[in-house]
Length: 176
Image 1 (cartoon, rainbow, N blue to C red):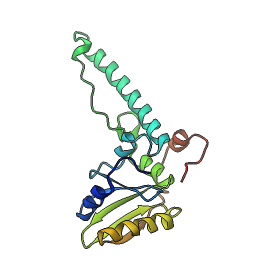
Image 2 (image 1 turned 30 degrees about the horizontal axis):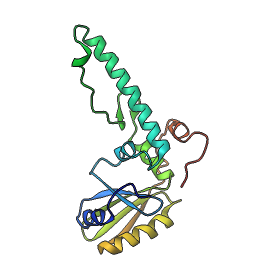
Image 3 (image 1 turned 120 degrees about the horizontal axis):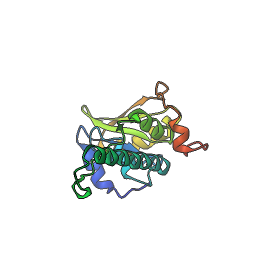
Image 4 (image 1 turned 90 degrees about the horizontal axis):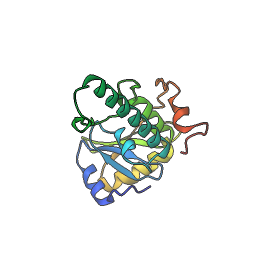
């Protein structure tokens, strides 16, 4: 699934240590800024559309709550003075920390996290269900970079999704 990333530029980024990103079920790698893995799905509507819609609805609710609070806290100010905050859906003040929920939704959908690290390693983290397919695709990518793939299986069973996954994907199972 090409989301507009130049494959050559992506490869160049992963030649350096410290680059992280996502690998999708098709094997395309998408670089992201360090510590910004989950925001990727809020910025790309076609990556996992259900997850994008979920995050967008969270953002709309947050901004509505924020503007109402601002209006209540500043009755003497005018609307043109209101500055909309930068919203990070991973750390919503009322919805709790969604970092693990977003990662589990991505992993369940067949995505994995990748990172280029020292000693010529390309680390892949994914669920056991998608390990074989993603490892094969990550090895192809790592070959181009002259890196060795290290796989970490994480089924994220420890994550309390608080019924968010059915809300994200409806009654249907995510498409791997």
